[in-house]
Length: 118
Image 1 (cartoon, rainbow, N blue to C red):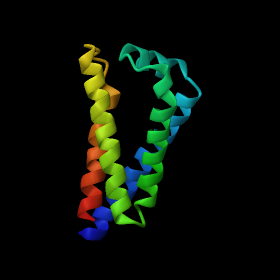
Image 2 (cartoon, rainbow, N blue to C red):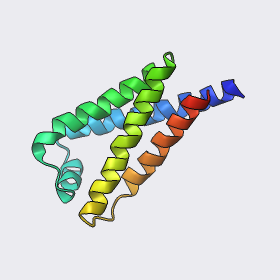
Image 3 (cartoon, one colour):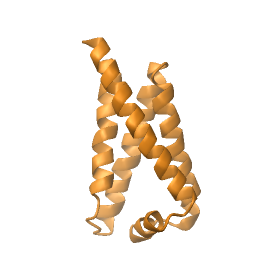
């Protein structure tokens, strides 16, 4: 069972890392949709490079976590907390277009559970 959990983590972790990499890239490129979403939840423009860096670090950690279990657990924990924060930011301003953040929270939590179990 442990090997199947690892394979599941590898799939979920790598897909999540791809999404995080794309999101970090779009944030750094100041993609119109990303900027509009960040403004809706009142994220200052000065935070964008830091948030993109956190997403990129999460992606790197998830991939490195394939070889170093504690790093994968730490990265999945950080990504889960990041997206919990995103959901809270949406709710705080009563912006209910939070499906992407909510889904990514669940995917990150799944990656965390799978890495712990593998």
